[in-house]
Image (tube, rainbow, N blue to C red; front, side, top):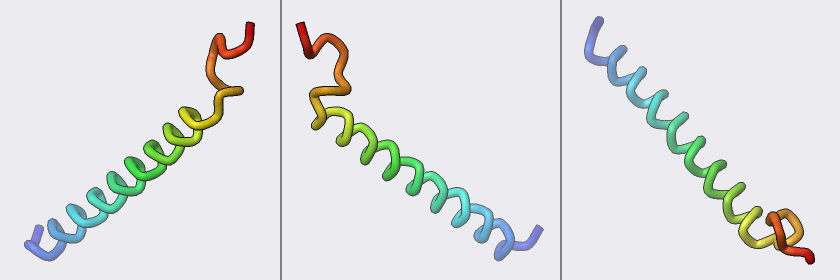
Length: 43
C-alpha cells in the first residue's frame, strides 16, 4: 500500500475517533446536567 492510502486510512480512523469522543462527551454532559435521569435522585 502506498503512503497516501495509509494516510487516508489514518485520517478516516482519526476522524471517526474524534466524532465518537465528541458524542460520548456530549451525552455524558447531558446526563450529568439532568437530575431526573440520575438514579436515586428522588426519594
